[in-house]
Amino acid sequence: MAVTLRAPSRTKRASHGRVSSITFGKEIMASIVLSNPTQERLERVFPKEMQSEARDILLEATRAYADYFGETDSFERFHIAALKVSRGDLKELRKAADLMNLDYRDLLVSAKFANDITAHLKWLPGKK
Figure 1 (spheres, rainbow, N blue to C red):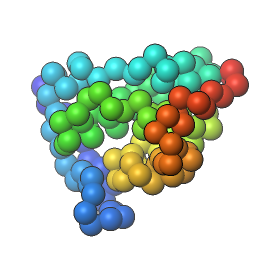
Figure 2 (cartoon, rainbow, N blue to C red):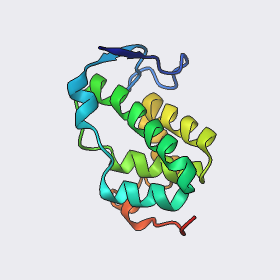
Figure 3 (cartoon, rainbow, N blue to C red):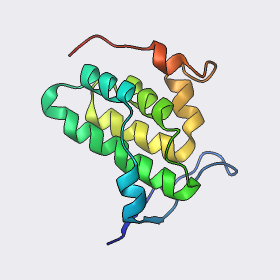
Figure 4 (cartoon, helix red, strand yellow):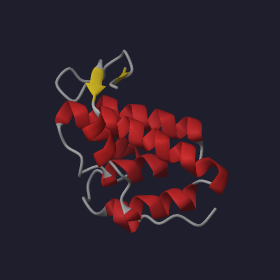
């Protein structure tokens, strides 16, 4: 069974990474997982009862992006950036996930990860 996702209808930049409608198959869905550093930060940012939903938000956004760009292994930086800007709020995490699909560079700037490719690994929030 295929699932269709729709990204936000507005676009910020005409030349990069817009996803208007995508269909992805089971092979992409099955191959995307959160990295250990991402999972550790998710557990620190979100309380236990919200972690499953937070994980689903990140994975759904990733699946849309992966199907469009054909990549599944370079999302750790984006995931951790989304977790950081969410500050433990699911609504903010959804906004960050939408921003990742709209223009991941804006997400990286918001998280202050844009100028250092390893900054996401240096950020380790306090435990919830």
